[in-house]
Length: 329
Ligand code: TRP
Image (tube, rainbow, N blue to C red; front, side, top):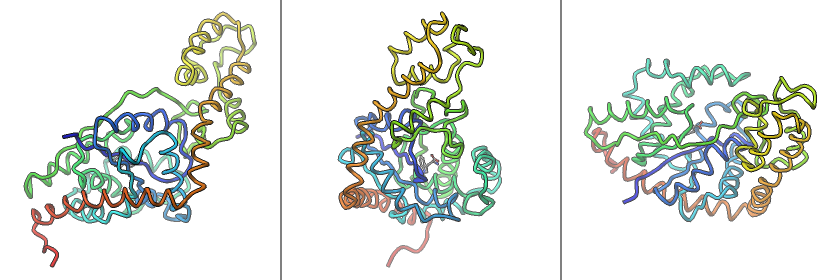
């Protein structure tokens, strides 16, 4: 029996290179080893976008098209919408009852998001409960493997604590999930900070070659290389780190030429823009094609939703029994 894996992303628009190399490339591979559930976390998106949620549905369809364009196969993995599976909220209710407030208030990701997501009022009951819903997402499928980035590690630790508490109180039915910290290449944003939608420092999967070029030309290179004949330090240059991920051979060449003052930053960036446009072309084309037939995309979701509902229903049935709430008549 394959282990169950669950991961998800919020449909807040514009998947970018960070999602591709940090998550999606692994999601594709993981489908062979695990029984995978990939979730469009629209309730989680609502928590931060509640003041302006009109794009949630459109973004959900788009993120589906983007996942598939990057190689996630709905025949091999279950792709579904969080809000379509009501059991997430039922388990969220139960877990809310047993979650100590202090655990939520101390959550480092929560504090970081309050700092990072500017211009929004996130001092809400819902946002404080973000990790409780995330724990419900995982535990309602009794997933034992959760691939996430380091920024989410605290949420996984929270999930284990809550599962342990549930099991101690009501009986052992929720397995504690493992964090799968897959090896992913480090890819910073255009401004050397973490690549993030909220920093607007990303290259989107859907960006045209023109936009890619403009963005790449704005990248910061080695500050010690001012003139063409200054020797550069490619191993501390963000542009070179992109080469390492997307064109390893060219990166090797660059690490030889740049310190020897034999190439300049402008040329280097122009070529990187071409490499990235080339890499993204098949993804962009497939995305366009998929989005042209929304009906087909919705059918994919419908099938995924059904599979997810079935699994979640079975867990909630047991949860209700263990907790002792009145069963369905
Ligand atoms: N919080 C995750 C993020 O922002 C998205 C998410 C929601 C998630 N529920 C999840 C990830 C469950 C893994 C498992 O990226």
